[in-house]
Length: 136
Length: 136
Length: 136
Length: 136
Image (cartoon, rainbow over all chains, first blue to last red; front, side, top):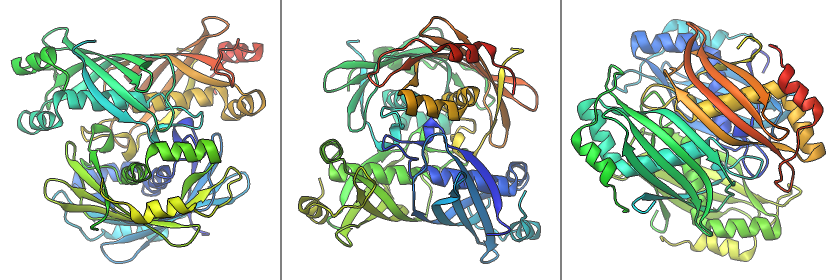
C-alpha cells in the first residue's frame, strides 16, 4: 500500500473493553476518522453545507487478526478507488506502530447521497482526490 | 426515591473498558436513556418534529461509588423537578440489581431549546409529566 | 429466518450522528448485544470466570440498506450455525419494527479463545445452543 | 489557565448526534484523552503493569455552554492540583479553536486505586508531575 494515506490513532481507555483489547466495533470508527482526514474534514463540511452531499457506508468487510491494547499507537492505512461513478471502495488496515503488526483489515464501500437520499455521481475533483491521494 | 421512574440496563461488552468495569462516561448514556423513557421516546420525537424543541444538558454532576461489570443488570432511578419555567433538574441513580448497591448518583440540569437554540418555557403538560411521573 | 432469536433495540440520541441516522459502527454494537442475549449474559460470564473462555469476532460483513432514526425501535434477528468445531457464523439482520423494513444485514464469524488467546473447540452444549436456538 | 496542558481534538461523525452537535457524554471522553496525554500514556501503562495502579474518576462536574459541530477542532485545557495525598482535581475546558469560544468546562476528581481497589497515596513523582505540568 505504497501510496496509502496514513493516519495515527492513540488507543485510549474508551476504546478498550473488559477483555483487555480494543472493542471490535471501534475499528469502524478508526477507519472512518482516517477517511475523514483522507478527504479533509473542511472539504466534507463544505460539500455538506454547500451542496447537501454526504458519504454513506454501503458495505463493510472486516477481518480481525490481532487485538490492540491500551496505550498502543496504531497506523491506519487508507487506499481509495472509484469502482464506478457512484461507488468508492476503500481498502484500509490498522497496523500496530511498534512492530508493524497487522491488526484489522477492511474493505469499505461508500456512496455519496444528496439531501433526498439519492446517490449522486462523484464530482471530477473528488475522483481525482480519491485516485491521486499521496501520503501526507 | 419512592416515585422514581425505573429503567433497566444490561451491561454489555461495549460498556466496559480494560479496567474491567463500566467506562465512566457511559453512565451519562445510561442516565439519558432513562430520561428518554421517562418522557417517552415518541413524545420527544413529536416535540422535535412538530415544535422544533429539544432538551439539552446544561449541568451534570456525577458521583462514582462502585463499578459495574459485564453481565450485570442495573436499575436506573430517575426523579425530575422543575427548578424554574426553563430548567428541570433530574436526580438519577444507577443501582446494581442483584444487591441494590449504589454505583453512581447524578444531578442533571436540562433546558428546552427551540430551533434557534433559544431556551423556551416548558409547556404545562410537560411540567405535569415531570412532577407527576409514576413508576411504570 | 424462522427460528431466529429476536432482540429489541430502542434508538437513543447516543446512537445517531449529525447526518440524522444511526452511526454505521453502532450496528456492530446492536448485533453484539443480540448475540449476548442469544447466549445469555450469565452463561458468557460463567464461561469467562470458570473456564477463561471468551468469544472474539474474526470476520464481519455488513450491508447497509436504510438508516434508522431517533426514537425508532429495531428488531435484531440472529441465527447461528457452527461452521466447524472452532468457528460459528451468525447471520443477523436489523429490522425497523414499524414497517419490517430491512436496515442492515450482517454475517459475523466468531471463534472462542482461552486465556492464552488460543482457539478452542466449542463444547457440545454450546454447539447445541447455537443450533437449537428458539425464539424467546 | 496559563500553565494548562493543551490537547487537540478533531470532531468526527462519531462524536455528534442527530441534534447536530457533539453528544454531551463525549466530552467526558475528550477530557479523559487529554488527561491521558497529560500523564503520558506510556507512564499510565507502566503504572498499571508494574504496580497494578490505575486512576478512577470519583466526582465529575460539567457545565455545557455551547455545542461543537462536525469538522471543528477543539482545544482541551487541563490543569491538575492535588487536593490531598489521595485525590487530584483536574480543571478542564473544551475550547473551540477558531474563535476561542468556551464550550464545556469541567472539574474531575480522581483517585488512584491498587489491584484490591483500595486508594493509594500518590507517589512523589506523580505529585510533581501534576503540579509542575507545562504546556507541551
